[in-house]
Image (cartoon, rainbow, N blue to C red; front, side):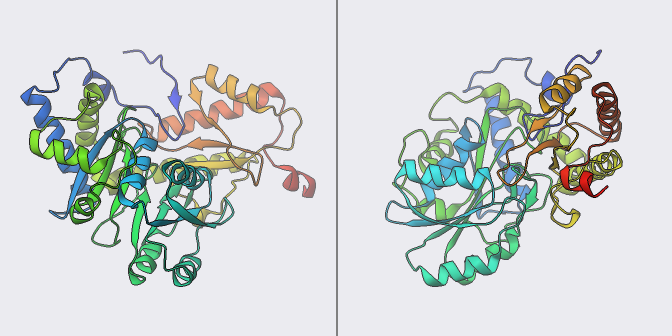
Length: 378
């Protein structure tokens, strides 16, 4: 097949394999035994990815990743509980909005978007506020691409006798997150990120005992993870129409994830993608927001160039014409744009993207991607 779709250098939706697309070319009923088998296998594989054994279960949730995060918060944080939300980007802030809508009490610890959350600050907050029952953390904050120290945060939370809930949306499947190493009650992610499926399915991998204890907590029928889990366990059916084609494509994507070497194999390809991208962009003068030690191989944030001939909208459109889609910035601390490293992309695609960036800069007359402070010093 000749390639017509652009390469998506975004945090998801992202470029998928032909075989994942082909998996959706059939119709199933939600009660078909083959679909039931596929769905059960999908749920089991996700638990295996966190080494959850028989202590964890997967609860699929129709909708985007945010549906899963809202279901997780609304189900696990009781109505008389209180969440401590760790914020260093848009997705931590989104959890505060979710808690406000759901009527859950919450406090926050906020860090700049280009800095990871400090576990010591979490420890101090827990010591000073005994009302806090749950800590809510983002594993990799795609606002900037920063990786938060989830294991260290988990240790602090466990020592304080509280419960940890993790939004692992952008990194799940590429950066290890193991129940044998991090004490958490639940982790939320979605089909269209590092597993390389298509959008439409969120999921929460939950500790079964915590899920049982959460019965009756949920603020919305559709987002009640306990009810969803109970019905699927008893009947093998979803309460409401499942996104069947998305689930079947996700099952295929999980097969391909395993064939690549699982979390380690997928992560290795993404790390190589990130290395190629960062080195190539720096060679063109661009500066990354994050130092290498904080940069997760998921999405990279670059400062806007100082050259007045660089107009992001034109840059974006001309890259799109050449077959590469990037992402605008989402920062408050700096004017920026982002380029993703995930999806069915490899060395050839990343080098092709760099060639496209170089060609567009020449077309726009931009001599260097250096931001203002570097351009001034030069």
